[in-house]
Image 1 (spheres, rainbow, N blue to C red):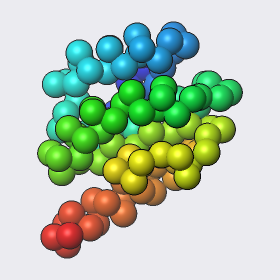
Image 2: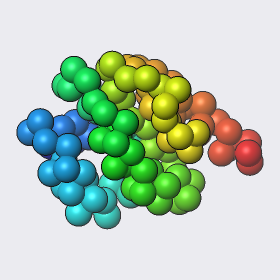
Image 3: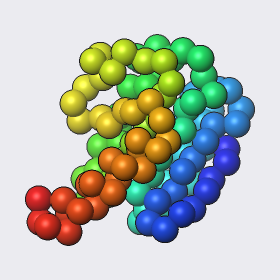
Length: 110
């Protein structure tokens, strides 16, 4: 697991190639970055099943309830399959843009 902090955002990248183990590490280390916006970078995978992405739903809901952004980056994925409460994008740059927009919305009280 590779963690990079940039401003109010932490980018977490899987380096093992094992989604369940990665999710466990992110969940167990959640308290160390729960005050940041989070980008989960899964771009190393060529394809991911919907169920693998949905495994992050509980963590995403918990983080968004705390008024922080939680964005998952996946290369090849049918974004229409994902539930509306999850933010899933194809690039890290797009994830950063989403977080900036959500920060502005929170600052404006939305």
